[in-house]
Amino acid sequence: MSDALVPVKFHVNGRAVDTRVPDDLPLIDFLQEALGLSGTRLCCGIGVCKACTVAARRAPGSQAQPMLACSTPVALLQGQSITTVEGTGSMERPSAVQRAFLEHFAFQCGYCTPGFVMATEMLLARLRVQPVKRAQLDAAIEDAVGQHICRCTGYARYHQAIRAVVLAEKGLVTA
Image (cartoon, rainbow, N blue to C red; front, side, top):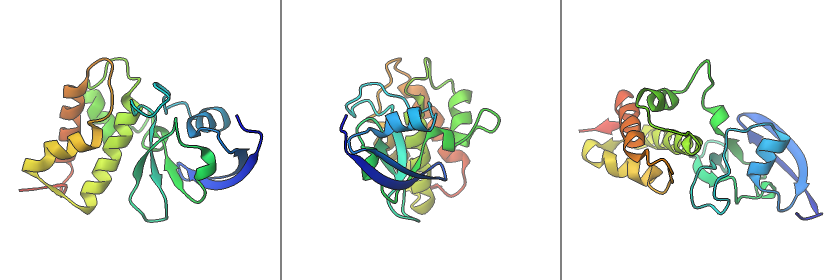
């Protein structure tokens, strides 16, 4: 870890963060240690598994893009807005994605689930702006979560749950 401290201002789940951090401090460490947000998971630590996926808006009003919290230094987040799995729903009020994952028994151990939730939330946001034809829905789902790794091999159920949540929301899929 570097000794150089860098000032950075950004948002996490709508909350302003104004801090000084080592220039190489990974976002996942900051989320868990400084903010107490333990939903984002560290698995491979090299950006391959995607369990640590969060949504990042680089500018206000921009479309959220996937960001890997294990390999993104906090120092690079100046002015950005980050959403973690905690920002999508709660135990009392789960998001539509979280409910679909539960209803379809989409996961076993659940370790990779936060990354799948975040990728699905970003897919829904993209489809609200640019709907997809029904014939292209499976390809859109694969594009959104195809690189995510589930060690329990829950892929089929994740895809079923994602398909169900997309089809349940009007206007995301065209004929």
